[in-house]
Every structure is written in structure tokens, then in C-alpha cells.
Length: 339
Length: 290
Image (cartoon, rainbow over all chains, first blue to last red; front, side, top):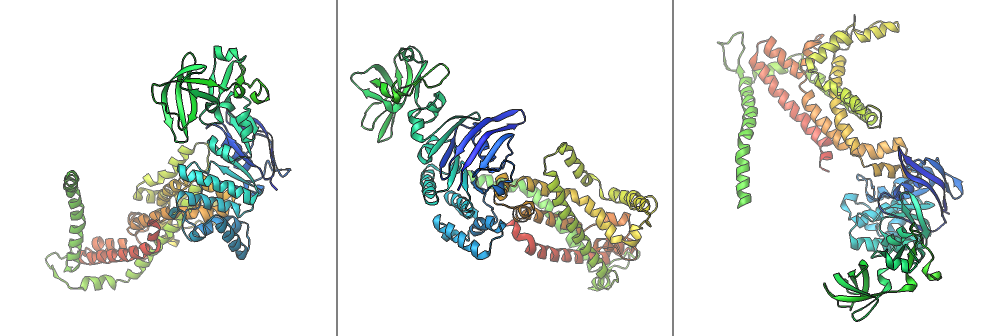
């Protein structure tokens, strides 16, 4: 059980309207990711759900019951913080046991639950250590362990991987996804990293300046972005957004072409371009091009595509996967439903 | 080589101040030690000679000796207790966001700027005086007999005065420690269901342990030698009720003109201070290692 409903939720800090008004439905067992650039209000929204900030207006329902004005501890939610927020003077065992101790459970029950959580998270050998004696990934797991033992109706993650190095981030991403499959508990996850959002989420909520730009599954957002902001935010490298005469010829103010949706050739094509930077990643090659009459553009080629600085290549966009936007930045019609 | 040269230079540059500090410490200590074994009374300066351990026996058999040791300990522990608990309480209050925070903090620190004799005189004549002190006025307002603080509770009165002076120091150190507590930890504890009391016990107090240690260590050093407050208020009395070791030494040296006896007392005080420091470091010093 862990559905969360936000009705008309708003948050004002002094003069600044951080979140004007948000409606959102999070179903039981879903992995929902809030993604957006810094200052988009995603962390604030999470803290509103957690109860660490008071709402300025609207309602927060958890499992259908109004928890808008309840204290954080009463909401049955557990949170994993960006800095892990472990208690530095307590051993790992005591850290994980802390919420159970506060709930005044029997010591035998506490020991069993802590043992179970440690087993799930591979922390059994580290239970007597202090947080300062652990690596970043282990600390992260302790923080997750402290959340698991409470058996919350939902987990809240506030950018939990941003303090880890790239390799560890990759493996922790898998561990959290795996944990979600094991526990089947609702998870709300905040990140600014669209790769984390794409790889982990059942449902992505894209936020910009406190407004929800679009809600949908990762592939929905990738295939049918509702506006230019979502189109530019989801997908790596970023979608190429072209204005001008070419867009007009397609009946749009702006057209969006993903780097992977173009055909590259050294002999012939629609546009002639000069390579300014070629990034060879092995499996892929990302070419930063200067297209004659259009401007800079990014294109993905296969790993075998041997182009270097100064080479001339020909680019042909795939019209069937082209995104068209009007002068307000809204998508005109989904390319896959027939442009 | 460059590092080698830098090191030598650094040592050379530091040498004068290290030497000065060393001389400053060693010479008075050596002189005190020397005088403590001399028969040297200013009333009879011609009769100077080796006294053996007589001065120590004389000081030890002084009827005020054990009482002054006891008074010293009571004074130190009493002031430490009041300043640490009071410092934590005031620190917690000042850590709350409020209007005029900066001004309030300066006001709280201000007793520290008042020099000890002045503070003691103010307390003696304006606050604790049985005739026209503030406490007496309050007592009369409630229809009670005003308390003659320095006659009835001499040591306790001095503890109050000294605690008032040191409270700002403790508050300041503990407040900065409170402000350095990670806000996410507080929020995590809040999510974990810890109420204010539990957050204080399990999160704030362990976080403050190191700062409390610093406060206790530094204050103990200064509180062992409290002197001015006693001189201007009770003058050690009534009887020896508010005489501590430092004041006893003063009495012996300047009221008895007995340089040898006072020096022996000084050496005893140094030894006592070291015993206190030893137990103190064993009790709280491990907090500094983290």
C-alpha cells in the first residue's frame, strides 16, 4: 500500500512562488522519478510529500487519507538523503535500528529486522562500524537500510547518487532498481540526471520552474515529448532544435531531430556538413557538425564511422522521427501518430 | 632541499617566541620551587636560609588547607555545571530563527567583556546586597526576609558570580557547535520518528560532546585560579568559607608576608592542578580524538 496523491499543491517561500500548483497521482508500487534542472522545485516537491516543508496550499493524500498537516514521522514514509544523513556517532547497526528504537519495538524484533535489512543490502560484515569507516556506496546502503526497516508505504529518495563517482553510480542504480523489484514498494526518486530517470523510472515527472511539463513512461517522453523543454531534457546527447526556413518547410516553428535519428554518409545526403568535434566512444561516435545553412548540430554514427576534425559528411534527417513544435514550443503532432 | 630550507627557516623564525614562552614558564616555576624550600619572610628579611620541607608542612597543617581544596573543587564543579547546562539551554534558544538575532547574541556575550573585579562589585553592591540589592527588593516584594548572600551562602554567591561571567563563553562555543549540526541529520531523525527530546539525546548531545569537552577543559584551567571575585566580595570569609587555594596563597604571601610558605602553597596548587588535569583528560579527553 503506498499511493500518493497531490491535489493543487503549492509552495511559496516569501515572495518566490516555487511551486505554483501541482496535481499528481502516484500509484501503489510505482517507481516515480522527478526530474528537472536545478531550481525546478523537484526537491521541494519531495520535501512537501515528506512533510519536511509545509504546503502553502492544496492537499497531500497518502493511501487516500489526508496527511497534509501531519508530522513527517506520522506519514509512514522513509527518506534517503543526498548527504545520506547517517548519525556519525552510531554504529551501522544502531543507525539502521534507530527508527525502530524510536517506535519502541522489542529488542528481539529490532535485531531480526536489522539483520534482514543488512542481508538484503550486503551490510552484514559492517554492522559494527561507524559511518566514517565506510565507503560512499556503503553509506548509501546504510541510509537505504535505515529506510527499509521501517517498512514504509513509500520510499523518498533525494538525489541519492549525486555524491558517488560514475562507476558506483551505475551499480547503485541497478541495486536500487533491483530493490524496487524485491520490495514492490512505491518509490519517489528525485534527480537532475536524465539517465537515472530513463533507466529507473516506471513513470517520469518532468518539472520546470515548479510546473509539471509532462508525466509519462520513459519511452513515452522520449518518443512524444509534449514541448520543447521535455524534448531537450530527455535523451542524450540532446535533441537538435532547428528554427528557420527548414522548420517552415515542415510546417513548424521549430523542428527537433535527435542525434540518433539521422543518416550519415560520406558521399551524399540532404545537408553538407563539416565535422568540428568527433567523440569516439567505441560503440558509438558522436559528431558535432557545422551544417551549411543550418548551423551546429549533433549526430550519432556507428563506432566504425571514421570521421575526424575538418572532414566533410552528409546528413539526412529521418522525417518519420522528426518532432515539430509551434511558436509557443508545444508539440504540433506526434511524429509517430502521423506527422 | 627547498623543503629542508623552509623547515630550518620556520624553526629559526619560531625560536624566539618559543624561547620566550619557555623562559616565561620555567623561570617563575624554578623561582617558586627555590623559594618554597627557603625560610624567607618579608618581616624578617635578614633571616633567610634553607628551610627543608618546613614550608610544606606549614602550609599543609594550616587549618584552612583542606577546606580551601574542597572549596576550590566545589567552585570549579559548580561553575562548570551551571555554565554547561545553561550554555546548552541558551545555545538551543539562540539557534532558533528569530527577530533581532544578531543583537541578542551580542547581548548574551557581553558579560564576558566585563572584567572580574567590576563584575563582582556590581553583583556585590547592586544585586546581592541585603539592603539595596535587586534580590533583596524581589524578596521584599514577596514579603520575604532578604537574604544576606555573602554572609549566609558565601561560596554559592561566588559560584553564581563566576558562572555569570563564564556562561557567555560556554554559550558561544556550544552555539557554534549547534549551528554546525547537519540539517539533513535533524530531518532524517525527524522522519525516523524521533521527537524533540529524542533528537536532543541521540543526535544533539553526541554532536556537542567535543565542544563540551573544550568548554570544560578551558574553564577548569581558569576556574582553578579564581581570585579577584573572592577578594572584592567575601575576602575569603566568613572564616574560611569562601577561601580557595589561590586565595589561601595570597593570604599567606601578602597578609603573612611569608614568601616561602606561599611558594610552597603555589607548588602544591600546581601539583593539584596537574592531578585534576590528569583525571579530566582521562574522563573527557577521548572526546577530542574523534
